[in-house]
View 1 (cartoon, helix red, strand yellow):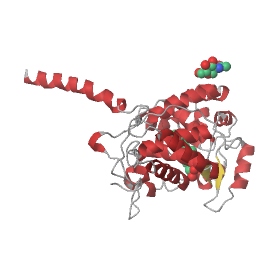
View 2: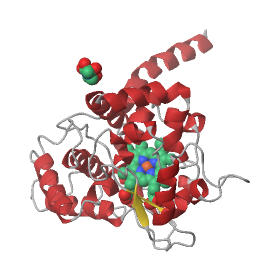
View 3: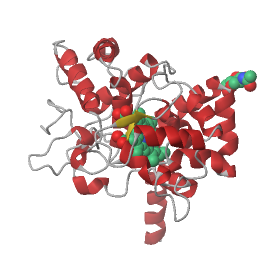
View 4: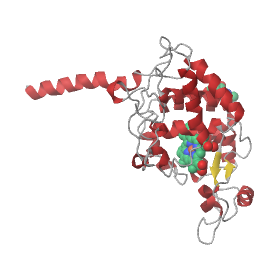
Length: 326
Ligand code: HEM
Ligand SMILES: *[C@@H]1O[C@H](CO)[C@@H](O)[C@H](O)[C@H]1NC(C)=O
């Protein structure tokens, strides 16, 4: 009888706890405390974007890396005095500084409004800035859900195996995205983020020089493109050299990424495998044919991404300085 009660109460509790993990986020979350927050962020981000296009890919990738490690809690922004924060990990060291700078600038703009000062979380600022850079680069505009708190922990070690690698195949990609509640379609749509931005040459050295014994170039790569990549990324290239990930429209957030995959112009194994593997090819073909379908899927997926591991209540805080815990 006792056990039965405990069981029954647990089930009841589950009912109340489970849905709230994402229900806490909502649109217009700051409408009372900081009614102009979205336009303040948009103005700051637009100004930064006009100075450098890198603002867009840098901010978008920053959001992704934040959400996949400890949830969307701005843990990626935290600095560590002894270089042991998330941002110091091998996977995050290549995050472009302009993404961090975008959040810092937007936060400063928010704090200049007395009503808003220290009322908006850094995690939410990053989510709003991400929405804005996607639109500025020619992608869809969407309503962004807000209400995240900032985390207090950021460690190099926690990045560990939480970010996808460019060498991943479809199964590895699906497994990692599924662990955050994202479907294969979400994963494919989000990979479309590689329609803008840069990669360092070392990421593709294996595909163009050392694929396997007796075959230096990956056969799933278009061979002319491989030759061009070898020219841009010669052996012993300066490690700072970065190349466009979308060779056709590198500064437009469009579905060219998917059309490129159909032609063997996917830069990473993880990109190209979305077309090579028959289980994901139909979705790539759909997004390649229909930019609207891609946009819809991207908005769905990035909204789901924004709900990953969100902190509420005493799990987090609203940071006064996005790079330090209060
Ligand atoms: C699907 C698995 C993914 C893998 C394996 C992957 C891997 C990578 C790698 C290796 C780079 C190049 C970094 C460098 O050399 O500097 C990169 C860049 C980038 N990634 Fe991903 N990524 C993935 C998914 C995503 C997602 C989901 C997003 C965002 C929604 C994203 C956004 C970006 C952007 C915008 C860049 C360019 C960054 C810049 O120009 O500063 N990626 N990615
Ligand atoms: C493209 O996708 C949109 C959204 O899913 C859909 O409404 C539209 O009918 C599609 N267009 C074509 C030509 O298939």
